[in-house]
Length: 347
Image (tube, rainbow, N blue to C red; front, side, top):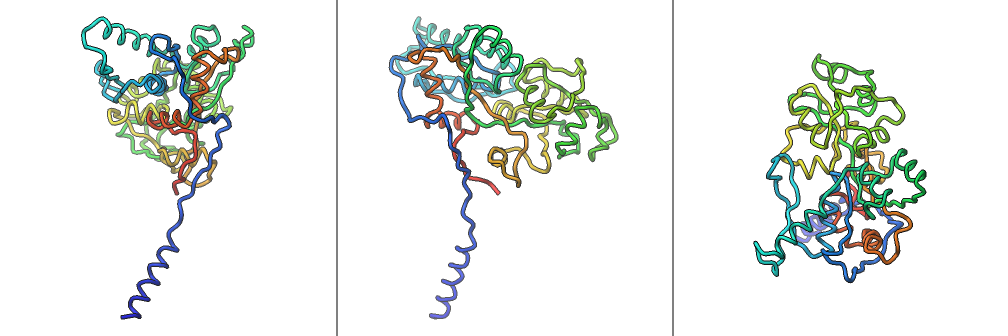
């Protein structure tokens, strides 16, 4: 009996020894500050924060968290094509009263957004004092700020990625980075060249200065000229989805967050692996950590931006600083983006 107990104990120790400890990506945020409150901040004096389409849920969650407003995800009742955030009325507001009308009108006013490029333009022009955007400033925006004598300060808030979508009927499941560049430069024109059917490829592109287009040129093309086909340029975040759903031979690109959280289970498209790696939170973190194995290659950042001359005691400046707190990182995680903090690595 003792021999049996010893043998079982030995086996247990052996199994324990074989269990590999989880690897952690230690991220040191250079902007990190301790949690703090913003006294006096109310719905009435909350500053307008402009943003891109894909960062609007994060912008709204930041506002809701700072003002103590409860929210939940639901299907957009107009289009039925995306999920969006809805808010709950505070307990002290009676429905169908003047206070209720003011509350909903004020929130509607603060939840307007103008897209990646216009958000930066509005910040440069002083139409807004803080933005949360899907990308850093573009060359054109930096040039415009310089011409107008405006200095903009930016900092990364979260990780995102650029993903590629095709019609579910397309049998291609994976493309290499070089194949994607080949498709969008015109070097590869048939799906048969990448393991698919003998049919021409319809590469769909986003409009210039959009966050997706900037990421496409910077992360994917890397100096390789893209096709210049105006008839394939879409006019909004949903245009790649609508195009791909209707075109069995199309390919498009979209932010991971928008695809996974805002479109989610409503999408009728297929997301491709790149170099054999499927985009998810784990592989994006691996990509952000610079791992060579199981790392998604097209990782990008979400940014906050503010004018450098914004007063230190303004609500916009204090919210900008608050965005680097642990609580703000919790809000980022709640939104569906990947917060810029230490994460467990996935093998």
